[in-house]
Image (cartoon, rainbow, N blue to C red; front, side, top):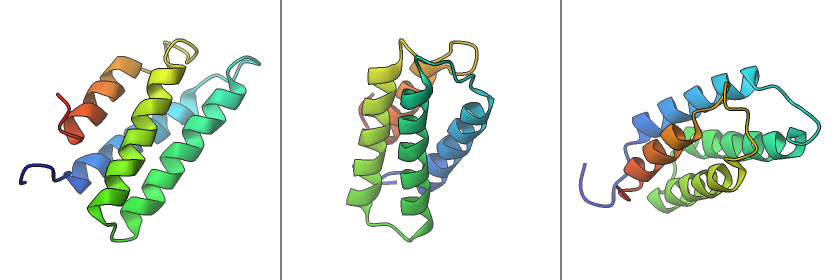
Length: 97
């Protein structure tokens, strides 16, 4: 992997992990809308990864996912999500850490 390149296999594994955790997430009244937003971001990233994506599309999808996780970190169920772990993984994929 060269500088600025994203490991697509690692990104796909991250999407799989997020989907598994989302399936287990409890949807309380306060977080149902936010969980759906995260699900939509994950689904969009999965579709991008499945379509022989341009690097810019993957980069944009990972940034959107990271932004959503940051914004929703306090509201997501702690037992279902390890938000800081996901943010760190996405950051590493993006070369931010």
